[in-house]
Length: 226
Length: 226
Image 1 (tube, each protein chain N blue to C red):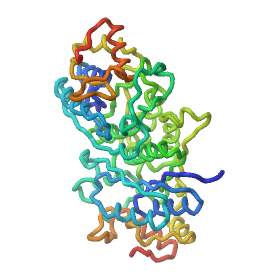
Image 2 (image 1 turned 180 degrees about the vertical axis):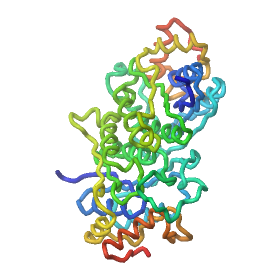
Image 3 (image 1 turned 90 degrees about the vertical axis):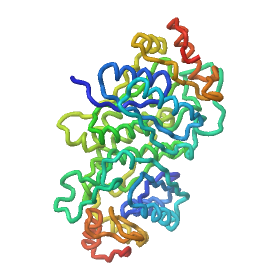
Image 4 (image 1 turned 135 degrees about the vertical axis):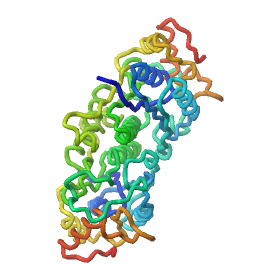
């Protein structure tokens, strides 16, 4: 198969940046998509823009969806982000944003259909993750099935058209760090923190910071963003 | 079952207005949701607001998603809306908006999860319709399945949680008109036209206008919006 156009969801964190780097290294023409969903943490959108340019995405778009007005998550409201949680991954935390990946993948699907692309990539992974339901393999398989029923391109094709790829799904954070470093993907502008300080300084204590630190530690590498 | 909270997608057209009216008549607490997706046709959002208030929705929200910047549809770009088409329903027309119902249902799902609601309603119907893939029963069944995999509420429930209801699915436009009139649902502010003139005057020639006119004609009723 000759790689062609792909839509890649890019939050500006470690996982989505590694995914975008992988996709570009494989020869795809990458259309990077970031979503401004009213996240308190605005720095990640600036990072995403810079990362897309640095890695060589063909283009980068930021689409706005005002999920913040719906509430329901510590990432879009004034609810404090939990720090130093014991039980990362064993429950669904307050940083869960209702239906977020479904909304993001739907927007990626719409853009892919307009572009004539059939491949959607995202950085979801189910090991060393925060426990979100919309990062699991059966969820992504169900979205892929839906995508082919939902669209003109899916209906008009004589075989399943859209594909949802989560190349990091079965990797640990340490694996992801190793893979990014092995491929020469620059992680220095990535921002994983749910609750960064001025200019994007990571808090070091939220789930995302702690999973990231564990990943670099287990990989025996220094985090270039620190 | 005691009806409770429901999220109802409301475009301000005949079908979604009838759906909202039905839901309210059945005793649900209706949370009406309209999406400002960059449609050229802005009047429908004003109509939706008025209809939600008149029918007695508990609340009405308009969420913004800028699909217009993605292009791909006559409803969000300067591409002319086709008039007097012969073959309504036999193909997917240029008024198709890529992944629109998937995006809309995802937003409805997010709001439902925040509200603690489990029921989503939309006015999709598969008879006398414009041929959109994301209005068919198997599409909606796939979305319902996805919703239960995608969400905290779906995962934490011990049985399928979210339900997607399309009560008009198997009705003709004439059936829908009859049902609305029988239930006393005021259709005078509804706007179906894809390309209305100043103040929402229907063009009379697009697929939506012609399907609507056919429905009123077959039901032997006068369109109160004319």
